[in-house]
Length: 274
Length: 70
Image (cartoon, rainbow over all chains, first blue to last red; front, side, top):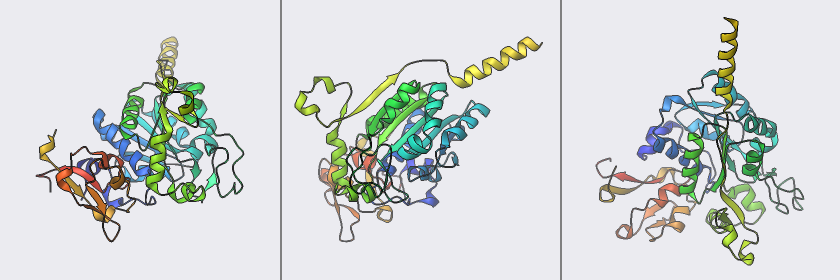
């Protein structure tokens, strides 16, 4: 028994999913299905591609054309899918490690090319599937199984990274701020170019236990209290800005899209050959 | 589109993992965990059918469904 949304867009025989109690990946996955539903996209014209990791399990539960690929390489496969079938809406589901460490170069070059792919990053600040190793988004000072005395690295800001690399739409919301998340995913899918929507997610099992963050509810409250919209951060008094993370839309511009440019090139060369 | 009157709060205990997120963020305290740490409705009269539980359930175990959609 399930809602109409789950019935329509999920492979119910695969549910319940394997994610841990309180893992917010399910919230983000549902938000993607909700965004697709609200846009009224044809299910058979949507392709969802993922790499490896907890987040990358998501397409297995979703009833679209789905592709579960190798670690970090979802965007490479997605680029092939999009160039072969430009009419498809291609969505990549990836995690913080998959997107910014193992697949970091695929990410910046897909952004640079501005290919019409929407990438949703489930950012839980840790490698959950392999046991809690620190990732490129683990905050400085936080604990991981490979950082038992605290992480000394500085974290990546994936949304800003994609924006700087050439993405034409970049935004961040959280698993708590679900309505905004759905809105940003919709705008990302509608954008004709490379879009990246980062969803701050929670990992109670590894990140939470290692860092004594408390229950899933406590971790959701942290998302609620710690993220401030980029539009209002300047209006806050200095003492309230301390330690806050930014959410909201960082980039929303129009630029030539890679698949369209590629087809134009083919047309031009064919014309010249005649 | 359903109007709020036609909507009913529904749960699927088999999918609930007892994370307590829906209980904690329900604005009108409609929900609780039962003795098995599964979701249950304890005060349906207070429900405003805002749908926040459905938006934030990681396990798709609670939702607003149509009354004639059993």
